[in-house]
Amino acid sequence: MTSVDSTATPQDYLRSLSRWHPIEIVFWLATLVPFFLFPDYLSLASQIAIAALFALSLDIILGYGGIVSLGHAAFFGIGAYAAAIFSKFVMGEPVIGLFAAALVAGIAGFASSFIIARFRHFTLIMITLGLGLLMQEIANRAHWLTGGSDGFQGIDIRPVLGIFRFDLYGYTAYGYALATLFVLFLATRRLVNSPFGLALRGIRERLVRMPAIGAAPRAHIQKAYTIAAVMAGIAGALLAQTTQTAALESISFQRSADVVVMLVLGGAGRLYGGLIGAVIFMIARDQFSGIAPQFWYFWIGLLLITVVMLLPNGILGGLSDIYARWRRK
Amino acid sequence: MLPPVFGVLFDGIAYGMLLFVLSVGLSVTLGLMNFVNLAHCAFAMLGGYVTVTLIDQLHWPFLATLPAAFLAAAAASVVLERVFYRRLYRASDLDQVLLTIGLAFVSVAVAAYFFGTLQQGIETPPMLRGSTAFFGLSLGNYRIFLIGVALLVTVLLVGGLEYTRFGAQVRAAVDNQRMASGLGINVDRTFAYTFALGSGLAGLGGALAIDIVGLDPNFSFAYLVYVLIIVSVGGLGSITGSFFAALLIGVSDIAGKYYFPELGAFLIYLVMLIILMWRPAGLFGKR
Image 1: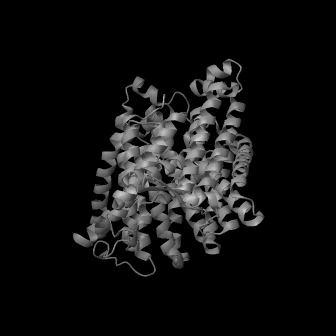
Image 2 (image 1 turned 60 degrees about the horizontal axis):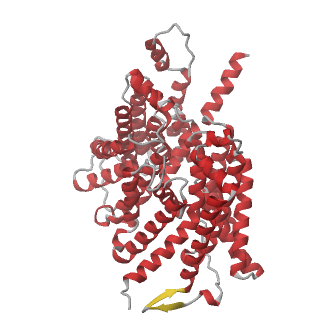
Image 3 (image 1 turned 45 degrees about the horizontal axis):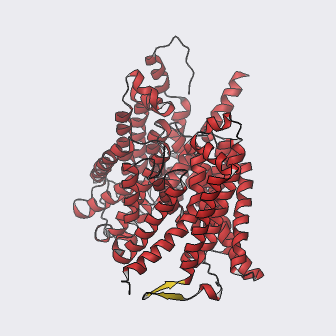
């Protein structure tokens, strides 16, 4: 967070937050590097972009709103299945499929937000966990629609906008996922640097005081939760479209836990936290699980313990602390 | 002659009693410190592996391994509590969730490293095998034993909480932590003992569970959901609540599997959500 002097107006503060930092521009230029330097890793890169979008969606509710969710994969999975079903029965155009998936996930998110907004703390964690498991079980049992544990059969994805065909190397997949991530990142950036974003932070810091300044916490939580569900649904749809599969794994508790790990690893409540966390998590998983897949979770567990004990604000939080200390000297 | 529905009911009660032993410790520690310990079932798994190792390698009798499972899990929990947990008592829910999920992940990998990913089984003593005829039902001996152990644990716990000095301190701390420490009760130490006791019970539950559900490295997560459901349905810090919630979940799970196999775990999750929405603090919870 940038510090501002006390005479500045709230408008100045928000404007100072929304100014582009040179590092941000470097970051986004760096996302183009895989096209030229690592063409063999483009499919991993598109997985990273999708995971980053999913983590970004969780950041809105968890990082900014302070709503701990252990069932966020429900919306990811709903988006994935919605995109798969749309491509099979309606049409194979991916961009329209994204909108369809976003709509379905948004409806699911809005419906569940009425429940979410009523609870806090342990009960909330249990309810998100329960809703996530319920959705997983529904996807598992609705074999006629989702294919259950066999996976969804018959996805048919046309070229993006009728021009870019999905190729074997993943040029289109990565370009498509990255473009979607960038557009939604801009939207999220605008959202969290708005008065609405400030209200969310207020809810995170102290819910009971928000009504005193005339804010309606439940309505804000509902809005944020629905937006996060839409974004998670789009991320799921991207995965289904780029890999041409939709499996139970996309709606599992494992995925819900993984995305929380990614976000916290990078730094919750920071725009780039989820993105950096997703990059590190996915590359580490790619490297470690090559050696011994069953022990990959040992390292994730160790990483989690280390982050909680030593870096309470994630990697980005740690870096910005070091930077602040260096500036003061 | 009793109709077969009583057999299902009996199996459900036995399963519920197993879940009760597994979850009661978490209920008390959550009620006492509001500490969200998602690694609770890792202690249960530890107890299970202690029993397996003692029987397979050292040829201990099954019943003698049960106290060992309890002590091993309790000892491990004391170490972890001193090193990790105590620093996060006042931290956010999220930090507690992350730390304990991390510990559970590590426990899964460590168990897979030492014992492999295969399901482990044990040889129970002859008197716990087979079944006893009872008004036309055949009741598994092991399940009768399980119900006996769980009832014994319940009596000891409830009696200990009601009639001992330590129990009074725990109750005071659950009801109002600040007031209790104001009266000179060392809440931190009370919690450490309770935590060891609860984790020890989880270890005992893990050892008892092997014959019913088996044991593999995924135990840490597979039963976590059940345990959390029981704790949140029963209400934090309530032994009676956990007891009845465990019965409810055990019977509805077994009955669901017998009569509606196509629903799977759906029924359990739905029961939990409905109870939580109806009473956010659980059936017997005060807060």
